[in-house]
Structures are given as structure tokens and as C-alpha cells.
Length: 139
Image (cartoon, rainbow, N blue to C red; front, side):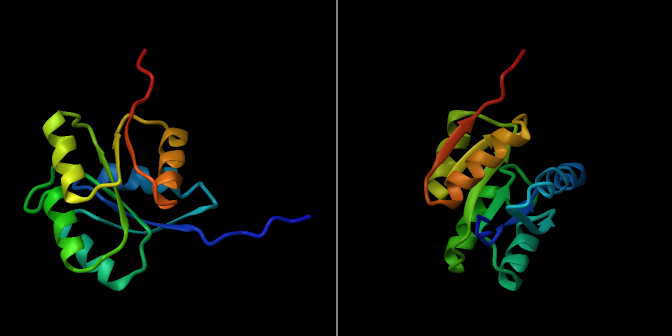
């Protein structure tokens, strides 16, 4: 009996660092149930890509020049975009988390998570639930 393949989760990666965007696209691209729609170095470019593509989940860096992740989320909401947002950052202060949640983030992950620790929360957020501060074991 074959399993009916569901549509892949369509992802947009937004981070001002090229190596992070490329690394995430490479890692996540290995998963059959995920489809990388594109990546953007700025919030403004992310908004343009959201206008042109159907996106389910946005991985969004919090601290970017010109337009922060919080401002990007607020503009997304103002423009009627329904993509769910996971903040992917190296910052974990209470203030950063609070501002992200207030702006509408459904997830908050630190950049040191493994692929497995990223994919499971991604599926959780895509399914309509929230998940915050998934941490990788530190040794």
C-alpha cells in the first residue's frame, strides 16, 4: 500500500547572511516534504517574494539591517500574508522573544539546532501550533 504524498511545505528563508541562507536551503532541501521557494537577504525582498509566491512558512532572522524581523512580520501581517513565521536566530533574550511573539511569530528557534530539531518544529508550526526556544544539546 503506498502512502499518498502530501504537498510539500513551501519555505522562504530570510537572513542577511548568505552562508546561513545557503546552508539552510541546502539542509532543508534534503527533505522530500519540504520545498524551498526562495531566500532573501532583507525584509523588503522577503515581502516582494511573498507577493510573487505561495509560502507556508518563513524562517526569519530577527536582527537584520534596514528592516528587522519584527518589522518584517508586522509588514507581512499588514499586507495580508498568511505564511507562518519561525524566528531563527542566535539571540535568546526575553525582550527578543517577547517582541517576536507580539509581532506574530509562531516559532522561535536558535541557530544551533540540528536538522531534526528544525524539521519537527517546522511541521508543528505548519500544522497550526506554536513552538518556542528549541535548544540543541550543548556539550
